[in-house]
Image 1 (tube, helix red, strand yellow):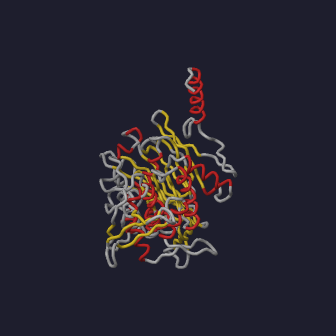
Image 2 (cartoon, rainbow, N blue to C red):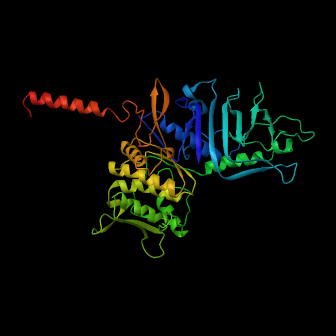
Image 3 (cartoon, rainbow, N blue to C red):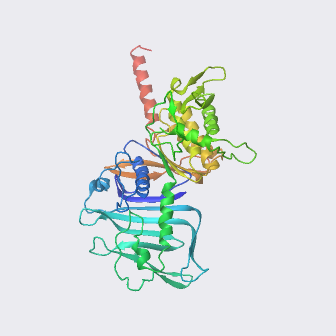
Length: 458
């Protein structure tokens, strides 16, 4: 799970400050306040980690990318020329990482279950994006690279720290006295590190941990595909639902073929992904039943059938309310991704009735508990927020399991305020106009009624 995030000089964020993240992290606020930019930072790093181009410091996106951010100058706060962008992450590892001592067999140098990473990126004077500094924090130590002063592409490896009372230092291979070239991408050590230093091979483990983190990040965008009368499935095994939820039927059929079962806790029957989806569609009172079926035996064409009530006829998903197709990728993604994943969602509540928006909170609570996933969402839904507050009051969600933020913008600069939740789910620092001025609207309505009555209209 990602524990903390911070960034500076990224888009509308001059400084985010340190952002603690929780199993459910909600970003609320007005339009164009910077909420989406926080998710875009994750997406930029994910597509950078997955890029085949090791020389590209940041993959800012193209037509087929998760996010398309333009040029590095456009990414910088106020598009400032002499500015560097900085970001930092802290996350838990899936299992204990142990670094063995290459000089003493059977001895371990470092061991830990969490990692941190900091990178500072700028232009190197030649108009090329460049890593100024990168630092991994592990087991109380720091390891990284820093660009040499007045150099565009030469780097030093650091540090020299005490480990168990002894001085740990990177040992140069005899005859390999040259400076290091630039890092690979924005987080990796060049191959020369292994050749130039006798005991630096473990740095590859830190780099791999970064890549594993972003391999377990999944994303669903706010604009989703319209439902279809037929779906073609040729046996693909998609990693997620696609940006627009276009792979949701593929994912459901893939999980069916793998005969996957998900535990629902002690004493409860395990569910397939399809059963979880059908359960929540019924629980949210959207439809009574749901199934994905081939048009005929052996066909690779499938249809999604639903029944609105126990007594109603079965119809295709195209013939019921639009909300069913919009929530389907949200539900499926929560139960399809591997356990321990981080899921990013933009406006999961879009096109949904207020009662269903509130019910989404229960879906997310169940998913983080049964799947141990992390959900980071950007939302405009007061109903979703209120249900999270209610579940905290009912002790079905602890205040430590939810981190809620209000994003705002003043004079072109995004700001972030953490909403303080007490044990009863109350927000003790509610921002003015958080979801509009409800009291002001009612007062204006009352005045209008009085004026019309004075004119004899009532």
